[in-house]
Structure formats: structure tokens, C-alpha cells
Amino acid sequence: MTRAVVLVFLAVTSTAQAQSGWKVSFGVSGAPEIARSRTLTTRERVSGLVLGGEAVAARGHLVARLRYGQGRVTNDTAGRDVAEGEALLGYKARPWLTVWFGPHARTFVVPGQSDRRWLLWSGRVTARGTLFPERVSSFVEVWQGVTGSLSRPSESASGGGAEAGLDLRLTRRPVWGRLAYRIEQGRAGTRRETVEAITLTIGVTPLP
Image (cartoon, rainbow, N blue to C red):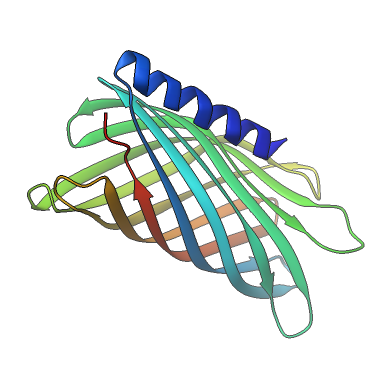
């Protein structure tokens, strides 16, 4: 289902770019992640590599962003698959400032147990700064969950996070890169789950 949504999004955005002036970019990423889970009685730390992709479509002040990733995180005694994604709609209030809203989800799959899924609807703000014109820029994004849920145990959830990094673009070429550090936390009842990642993304913005 997720792959079908991604394929439809890519097809629609590519067609939109060709026909109506939308600017579309695509990227693939790799991120070593560390996830820490804490309740009143237990502590757990797992780590691993998550691979993913993203698509961003923008026109005028409007922008949409879709990201998806999956991988496997382990510790000395156990492992689990992880899948995460977001679908955001944004508005560029200024050339350097974008506000976002949309869902963000993360699912941990443990063999022999039901999946543990975090789903948060969040508001976000992204601010950008120029270090070298048309070559290198910095960004900071902060977000806060407005409403959310945890599937196991079934509870309402909240959370927030931040991401910061650098974007590198090659002048007059469609290739770009991003290096970013991200931290986020979900909270539900007595459970706290914190995820940290360093993400390297390589992308392309097709020329008109």
C-alpha cells in the first residue's frame, strides 16, 4: 500500500511539473538510527540503518513533502524491523520560512508480538539561511505533535522533535545533497521513546 502511494505521488508530481510549473525534487537517504525506549520498569536501546526516499513538490507559496524509510534496529539480544514516514503540506510564509502540517508515523515490528505504532499529527516550522549563495545553505526544523496515538498499549500520545543540517547544491546541475541530524521523542502514558539519526540524502531536481 505504501509503495503504491509513493508511486502515485511520483507520477502525479512529475506530470504536474511538466504541465503546470510545479518544481519537483526526489531524494534517497541512509540514516544510522538509535532508538531508546523507557517505561517505569524497563530501559531499552536499539540501533541500526534505515534507508528511505523523499519527494517534494512546490509551486509559489505551496509545498508538499512525502518521506518514507525502513530498516532494522537491534541490540545484543533482539532485533526488530522499523518503518517510518510523513506526509506534510506546507506554506512558504517567507523565502526562508516554511510552516507545515501533517501526519508522522513510526512502526516497530517485533517477531511474535503485535506492532507498536506511533502516529502523530504535527505542526512544524522550517527556517533556512544562506552560507554560500546558490551552493550551501543551512536549515533548522522544529515540530510539535498536536494530537496522536500509540497502538500498543492503546493510548493517546504526544511528542516533538527537531532537525538541523546543511544543503549542498551544484550550480546549474540538478544534483543536490543534504547532511542532517534529527532527534524526536514520543510520549504515551509512562512510555518515552527517543530517536536520534544522522541522515545523508542525495537527490535530484529534474530540469524543466
